Length: 325
Image (cartoon, rainbow, N blue to C red; front, side):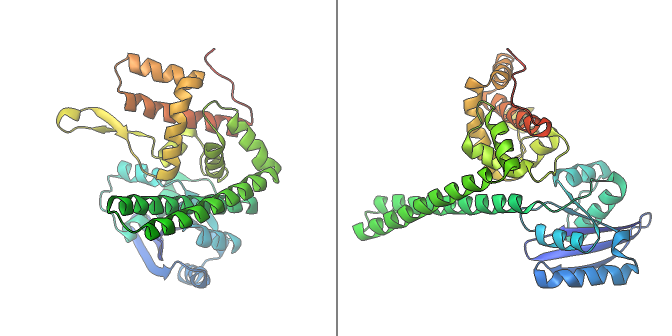
């Protein structure tokens, strides 16, 4: 078998063929990350390895939306494609003692990961899942635009700017709010029109603390099928504790905060509710507080617990049942 690593960036793809595992002899080439380059990547891989697509095993990380085009193209061409949670190669690098980080080093690490760790083969998401994610991304983009305009309004009011400026900002905010509402309705209709999405949202919303906003986000994440266990999902969302050892904070843990901050922020708010109304989350939070943990440490654990419960109901296709009565 032949192992390839591709380090995915917004604008480029660093491709590496691991010719020899022991000597780490490699062959590399950089391509643009666009549709026009994908055929060139396929042709280069076949030419340089003198192999057929079904003999090549290509590993790359899930990087927002930037991996989707090349991964789908290579899958459709018959290559074995493995899209992995970024937290896994990071842990793999630590185990190998790899500290230097370059695009070539990342590609080599991914090729080694594919060789040694035997990841699960990737298949493209269903069209309804891709549309779900696209709608969520667009809504999030509009939310950021709204916040930017509100910040401008605050600055304009402090500076005592012309009322014309403030009225202009108000008009833009009004338009953006209406568009957000329209797309949210479109998103909910899309979910309701697809039985699997509809069922999974219902299961997620059976969890106290998980409302419509978080259920949509978790539905998009879990439907990607990238996660084999709850811990991997927590790592992807940046909810794994990290020990800080500086000054007066020695030994105190904080969240790693890698991964998508927008989802993490929504889970934070959900955990605030869940620690009051979800029996399992509440029991965990109170136990940690009673054991001397800070509010934020206990709340971080509550966030992980909530994600674990979401993973469980999704995986087992059953509504939430409290473990603590």
